[in-house]
Image (tube, rainbow, N blue to C red):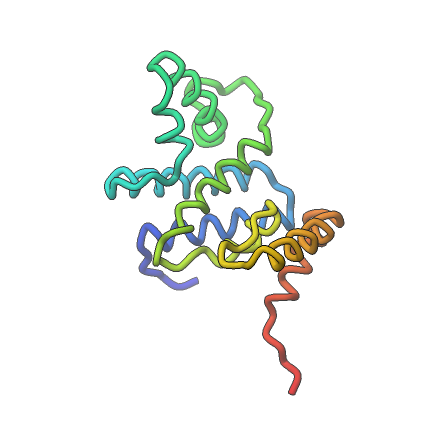
Length: 175
């Protein structure tokens, strides 16, 4: 492996791409959550510095609640990532990691790129499609067709959906 010079956004894109690929191909919730949380926290810091709204959950959503509830919500959201990073306070316990929290954080992290001119993570559209979110620039008829196709594609499960999406993104080598 060679040395690389990377920006914070390069790191975020790489972490999100790895999280998405693992999500579809290995079903390793621990790795997906860890990568998503790392990328999410970088994006949160960038958003704080730039004054933007995304990622939304750990900032805007939580800040809508009174201080007492805010702490409860932050602890709920942050506990799994802290559990997976540290062993100083909870060495002898186990947790139940909920994939829905991971998926919500992943969707929220990806939403950071929605209105940005920066390049999106490579698998941005794949995860959006899996979640049933069609591209914004489609007319209504095409949206309905796309949503129907994605629903049928998702019915085979994550691995089959990933394989289909990877195949559809391969360059056409005929001719």
